[in-house]
Length: 510
Image (cartoon, rainbow, N blue to C red):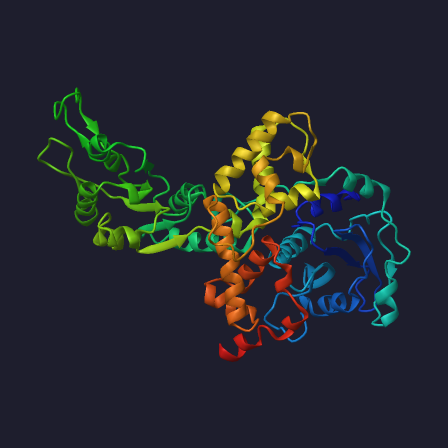
């Protein structure tokens, strides 16, 4: 029988950053419609009791589908509260409930947590023991008296208070289906994984767009492993790592004696990728003369080694990646338009880490386990989480991996990650921010980017008369993306009581 510690394990996965959030797990004791409900687990980000939204739980149990409570007049906004039923067989035996604030940038991540938790609990919920001190037997009544007094007599268990004092457990890293090797739970990463899964089997050439350190090679390998070419080789080339004098020989190979130093025959990387996938990282740095030769290989599917007259047939799928704006490179004459369109049959954009802060803690957990596999589980304080989420991560996932290695190297005996243990750049980021309209001061580029984004966000919201959905569309963001940036930059003054009708125009104009 699963003991009370099952709830500690499940709550490790709950996305949190110190903002108000609540989670409950409820079980129905019996099969009758009026069977009593038992609250198995209750958690609040501040440790304070909170009333269970019983009406929403009853809807989820009766209809066997999620029940949502939205902000007033905002049917398109994320729910304030979600009750996800736990389905066993054909009936709902319980529910996982999450709640947050109306403009919570973590709403999507918590919804996904509720869905995955409900699926995991389906086979064990009927045997699970309650979390001591945090549950009461509840009769399924809609009487308002239940709403305010469900937690009145419930006390936080001592074990839970002690664990909170020692920091929060890091979530267990989980890989995404369709994107092996990638860790995260954000909606952005899930959408990317879904697209990779559908594109991989098609066999078409793919162009990956994303900043340095976002994990483009992981996506390229997922495209290879998910295709019919998986038994064949996966060959990679970093176009920025080779000098021009060696580029052609490495790419196409050479015969013995073709040039000084060519003592023996050597097959090129293209030839080695026959029957598989050839991945070209930083394709924007490939010399222009070689772009022409590569284009011919893509058109004719044949490779000729340096110094030879005969060519060899090759069967290759091309995946290219770049952090550069190739449209600008084409305008500047540094990249060929015809090669661009040969590569860009499908274009996938990999979001930077700052756009998906939900993935920071799972990634950090994965990197810490990799760097110190024999260590006990790490824990982290709320202020350290806030500092990690506030940093812009210009080096993206690679920078976070280095931060984990630094923590292991400098603090090998510290069981809890605190803000003072983080790099000074991350610690400093939690301090005062520059003014939004201070665009003329000379500063570091990473900081200047933030100033510009803050300035444009305010300008777009002012131009749209406070309608956040219209502002998000103007900025090329999703509504959730805009709220994430507002939360990340601490621009709380932009969220006012007048926001109740901010998004209505979007529904009218869509």
